[in-house]
Image 1 (cartoon, rainbow, N blue to C red):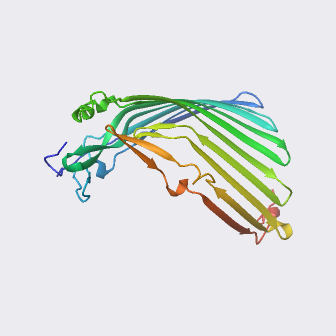
Image 2 (cartoon, rainbow, N blue to C red):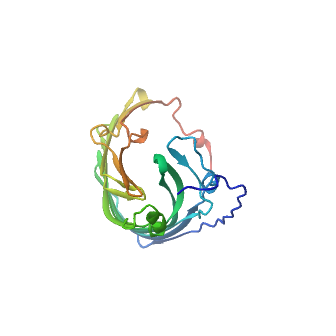
Image 3 (cartoon, rainbow, N blue to C red):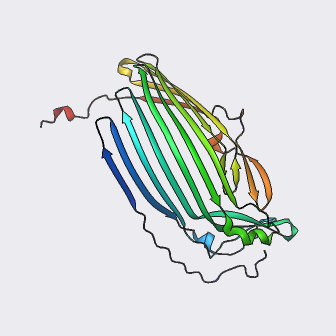
Length: 294
């Protein structure tokens, strides 16, 4: 798709913003609570996304905007229940999220191996999910938090039918569905009054998105903290985040109008990180509140 005009000389767009949030909470008993929540939010396109000036500075990668873009809309609805006791609690949350007109970048292939990147609105995304969480205080020294998320997602990109046919992709799949799950575990261990350890394990199942999908991923983090000196004034913390990075590759597969590419994600937040923190408490007290008389 070759545009005849690089620049829109006059652009005038109006967007209206109203984002309601509604929460209802019921205290059913001393150990049980129930909640209903609804939230609406949106994302406006920025000026670069709306102006269809064609940036040709890249030899083979050009970028442009789309003056017909609409704002993305997000609806979230959830039902939650929690049962709490002194040494454990269990919670369940049912959630539904719908996204309309989400903004994504699509690559159009032009002659001479040139790719034009353009923002477009994608029709609708629907997600149904349930989250189970429990916390257990096994003993004065050990506690554990576990959670499991089951999720069903449907991506409907049928509004891109014309773009797909323009590239000879009449049979291109434009509606995708997926069921996946995530598992999370966090444990804390008080070795003694001065030494503490924590352990976090996260498993993320295969994740579907507008550009393709991301393969399953396992994340592991460990931390150790010790207190030193009189009154525990000195605190040392040593930790490792993303311990599995380098052993397990975070891989994503993208689909640009029938062209598939495999990417290994090496962003900083996915790399193994070593942490050292030193904290010293100079004055330990209540900042004078003991002198206040009521």
